[in-house]
Amino acid sequence: MAFEIERKLVIGVASSALFDLTASHQVYLDSGPDEYRRYQERNLDVILGKGVAFPFIRRFLNINKVFPRHHPVEVVLLSRNSPETGLRVMRSIAHYGLDISRAAFITGQSPYTYLPAFNAALFLSANEQDVKSAIAANYPAGLVLPSKIVDDDDDIELRVAFDFDGVIADDESETIFKRNNDLSEFHAHETLHMAVPHQPGPLAEMFRKLSLMQKLEERAQRRDPAYKKVLRIAIITARNAPSHERVVTTLKSWGVSASETFFLGGMNKTRVLSIFKPHIFFDDQLTHLTSSPGGTIPMVHVPFGIANRRPLE
Image (tube, rainbow, N blue to C red; front, side, top):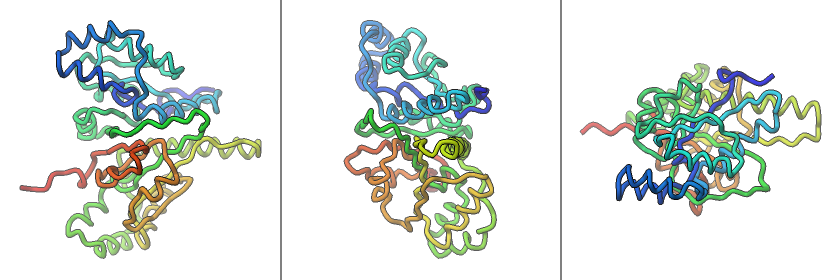
């Protein structure tokens, strides 16, 4: 039986994340909304190029092909466009064969307020203010950063990578570290609280539901040893021993796990990312997102917690 939307893993995606809207946006900036509307109408049948989130979204939707009885995931288009200007986006979705049927067109307003209506565990957008507003309202959101688009049709595996603090978990421990920038104080706090699970962070629900997909795949592999898994999840954190134990405690208390977990102790994360090659990587700190090797890893900034608060003047 197919999952109801309340049980599905739903991702809301803005057209700015899914497609390359560089030319369209420039028309809007240069000439205003009326000329933008006319531009989109003139180019209605000109297919939009792939955006940074496209390879991730395409593979994410393929999970439904692996589990057609459950149909456990869904993508909803959440757009600032009007229905008229959004026609080009919907035609581009159809051209690429993306199974996206639900959409919200808000005509110039930010669409993030409708995330609860669609049970969305993530809102992806290239509009920084929309993402920050969503996070401020305690909704899960990420800002897609510019990068080169690499979409290998022969690569059917979906690889998703997460930072831990401020992304999957709350920023309690990050707050302890930022207080004095003292790593010893941070480790002492985490050792003292190693048996205390963290509170969920902004993408905790997304991570939990992806973990459910992993369990579905494990069952499929037990039934059929020849079954090839399509989903890999990684946690890539700057933590190391002894603060690693609280990560394990937290995930165990939620009944979830990752395929691969890396405790890097401050190493540059791109050393692992360049091997894991995720189709999307979520981190709350921009310093971890600006050194992608060759700019080919889709990076998403989650502007949550103390790492994203301005210091007091």
